[in-house]
Structures are given as C-alpha cells and as structure tokens.
Image (cartoon, rainbow, N blue to C red; front, side, top):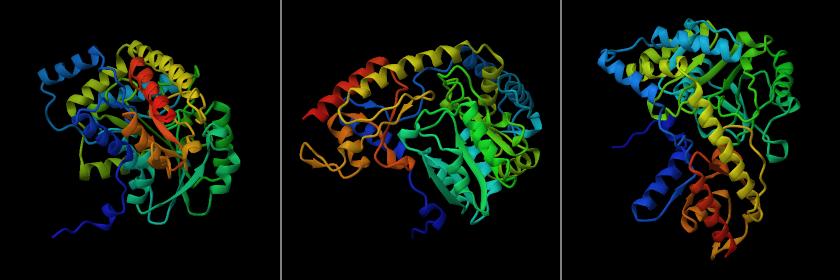
Length: 395
C-alpha cells in the first residue's frame, strides 16, 4: 500500500534535475545532446583541494564530524567573511552543512511557522518556494522581469510586506538570471528593511565569486540589518566542488544554535573528508577562483552575443553567475515543425527534441515566458548549441 505524506505530495520535482534527466535519456538513446540545463561548473576541482582530501583520508579523518562542522573550517570561513566581505561572524555562528541547499532549508525550517510569509523576488531558484512549502509557510513572490534587469525595487519590497512577513530571501548574483545587486541597490532595500525589525534577511551568496562587476557587496555588511542577516554560501560554484556537498550558514547566534539543533537530528555533521577539502579551498591560493571567473566572463560575452542574434529573443547582459535568462515569449502561441508552442515548457521541450539542446523553462523559476541557459560549458558547446537553436527556429 502506498501512503505518501501530504508534505511530500505537495512538493514539485526539481525542474532543473528533471530536464537534465530527460537530456541524459535522449543521450543514452544515441542523441548528441548539449546540456545547458544544469548549474554546475565544468571545471575539475583544483589539485591542491583534492590533495587535501587525500591527506584527510591518510590522516584518518574518517569518523563522525561535529554537527556544525570542524572548528578549523569554521574559523577559515569566519576569516574569509571578515577578509573578503568585511563582516563579522564568529566560528560559533557558522554551521556547515551538506551543501548550501541544506543550509537554506535548515534556516527556513528553523524560522518559519505555518502561515509565516517569506518574500521571494522572482525569477527565483526552483527550490526556494518548495522549502517554504515544506515549512508550511507562504511564499510572497515579487516579480522583476527583464526590463528591470530582474531586480526588485524598494517600492516593490515595501508593498509586499505585511504583518505576517518573517523573511526576505535574496539571491545575488542570481540563479537563474545572473543579475547582481549593486551596493546602492542593496542600500535602497536596506532602507526599507530597517523599518521592519521582525524580518530576517537571508542572503544566498553562493555565486559571489562568479561576478563580472569588479566588486561584491554582502547583505550582511549593512549595519542597519547585520544582527538579523543570515548568509548562505559554500564551495560548490567558486571552487568547482559541487559533488563535495559543503555549504554553510553564517547567522545570529540564536539562529545558528537552532540550525545546529535541527541538523543534529536529521543529518548530523557533513562529510569529514569534504570538510578538510573545503578548508583547503578557503585557506589556499585563490588564483583558481579568478581563473574560472575569467573563463565564465568570456563565455558570458559569447552567449550574450549569440543569443542576441536569435530572432524573437529578448536578452540582457547578466553581471554574474553562469546563466542567461532570455525572454522567449515571442514563440509562445506559434507553431514550429507542426508543434504548437503553448508555453515556455513546450518551447524548452521543442529545443530539447529538435535541437538536442537542454534548457529549463522559466516557469520553474516562477517567471513564465523565459528559459534558463547555463553557460557552464565549453565555448565550443555554446557555439554548437546556438547553431542548432538557430536552425530549429528557422524551419
């Protein structure tokens, strides 16, 4: 007898993972697929980080780790935040988890009660809304389309706040759009938030180092809200360590203790060996981060140029991360090769089946009429993908 909880039944499947799986199935059938659907650097983890993991095995770091993470790693994170971001979080305020995804969920489950409202600017990463749903909270979606560079205004933020608002969840640089809030834009949001001391600000800064603006401002650097700001970050994107599964939250002490308590009951400490690798990432040379950032910037310029030449696509120039989020609403309602394109999901599926290019529908990010393309792949793959897209849309 199948008996699935309402909690799990209410969750949507990850659209990014679903499209990646569909792409893999077509590839297994012999199709020459180009996967632009997955948010994962195509670089290998740098050698000095891999060596640290090997040493950890030889030194028998193979036992349970402390629930909030090894103290040397938490000290390294604390120092990174101070040096790079100018913010002060003691090691005791840092909880290391099995990826930034778990860190996000830990904080939401520790803060949100049934009926509490979480403001989420959209487009937004696919899991935010589902995590709030898991906590029985209510997502209040604030849309910012391509004409405002996918960034919400202070007026929009203030209009979304109610007496039930408990959290703002802000991602910069953004997944899925690559938009980066400037210091002035963040200050304008802070000027609103300072009037609402009950609102916790959770800043997802996982793409911090994949940034083409020349500077990065952390949400925790504003003194008006520093005592209620939670930072989410990790090693997956900046250091090409997606499979190592190490993320962290840096939070007010009361909240760090709450997430530690929660994590202690359902996963305990993150992988001991991956933690030692992450420590090496934070304390070693940062040249690998800059080398990858430069490669992503070159690819950004390439994909913007190619996407701008696709008839009917509306494209902006993202300032960070490794995503492009074009408006493809021009094609909705049209018929391509005998197939009626009813929505962005149909358009993404058309590209998958006819161009053998995997993308993700904008609806998955709460923004219909768009698609997300990841350019975390080779220049050659990007060029080849757009040759195919142009041909598939020209017929």
